[in-house]
Amino acid sequence: MKWLVAEFVHETNTFSTIHPGRDEFAAVILHEGPAIPQYYKGTRTCVGAFMDFAERNGIELVWTVAAHTTPAGPIQAGFYEWVKSRILDGLKENVDEIGSAS
Image (cartoon, rainbow, N blue to C red; front, side, top):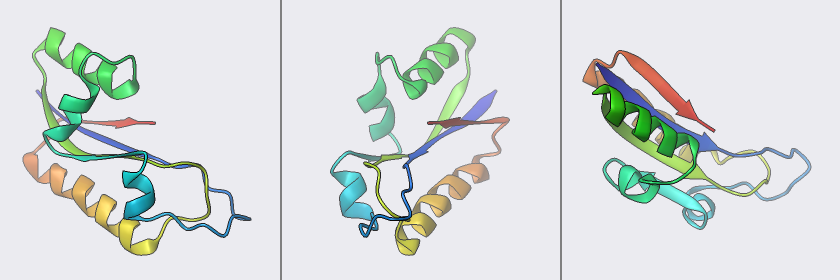
């Protein structure tokens, strides 16, 4: 069995004049591919729990993107499209399930 793992976390406040993009996400959490399990291994987080469960049950994980930033206004369109494309590219791996952490 193969699961796709993606994490995209942002609280949107429409009154904020800050529109986060790559730099704002990178200042908090922004990892791709194999850097994701290196960051989350052994943590008490959603992604850490996916990893623990997958390891116990022989599930292969397909790593796409993990991105967090602080609350701000709407995300910059170009960065949103980049994150979306990373997640959709992961679907090319013929996954059985999708795990979305938040």
